[in-house]
Image (cartoon, rainbow, N blue to C red; front, top):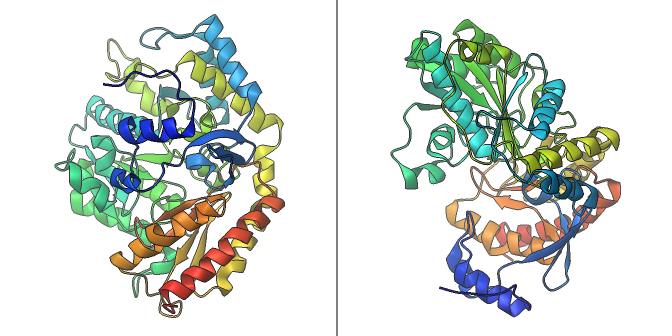
Length: 460
């Protein structure tokens, strides 16, 4: 047991972090011989560590900080709300900020997505959607429609329900057996389509899975507009429209998982608007508050709500802090910034410049593919560009964790070097970033990737 006042020195913080803080998705043993990176301040597109070093936040922390760091006005909105009403639940009660935010979201969401069920984050939003699908089908006379179709390598969250939809083997295996019902089809990795398998086959894979499982057992299809895990897979033309047709034909709920792809990340309020399709449910989080407070939401259509408006029926599900008044006030202030300061317009104006900077790196031998949309892109790294030969597991470990992650950070760029799928570097800057920031990113990426080529391809 430890008791301490606020740690006053960086040595104190390091000691306490290593002794007491269990970091998420982290190899804790790695910090036995290395310092824990401790970020203490942020402003705009930059953050500073406890040594005073500045970093460009090329991942928006975790695809979250749309409006950048240090917005005192957004933080103040939360503080002002805490003085008025610090907390009250949305369990059979309401409060003004939750009502106002729900109406604001409904006004921005596509089509008839008018019903907003708040959560504390993205995984909870997905879990809520999967539970809603099950109860909805039971109430409408189809109790066997419990299965959910997702895509291979896709990440949808870590709760046992969301994990059953997640298609990343290494994240699933430690916690098996999972909630039953998860089925997986090909993702839209257009760089690595199987021989003889065209882009036009990808949506049909969803139909084939439904027919194999039995349409009367499939309750939902869950897809990200741009798939995060694997490295920003974008859809081929007509993909989502065809999936929508398939779902309608078999009475299947279409869930657009937009925990990352909403609130301007792709240049629109929601990714479904970017790709012009109408889901039955959108799951969202992260950018809803630009991470100034934890919040998520499930946004459902009027059709999905209809069975719950009859008699004594209720959706038997909820979270203590969902719709928290402080988080809701922060979300409203964040949406004000997005709406009134041209943040989405900035993404649309500069997306091509961001993409062009990344495309310019194709002259580096290790760069195999560049893909993504809006301010959400990835670079796939390959051993042989002509054959698209990737790196094996051991080589990926050396490349990503033995060199790239540390070297990019050392040079002042925060991004994600990942191998849930093939090795990629993901870049997702704050939505306020512009050309000068792209140049700064390139000035770090180019020499590091050139050195990675020498180490991994030429073994220099």
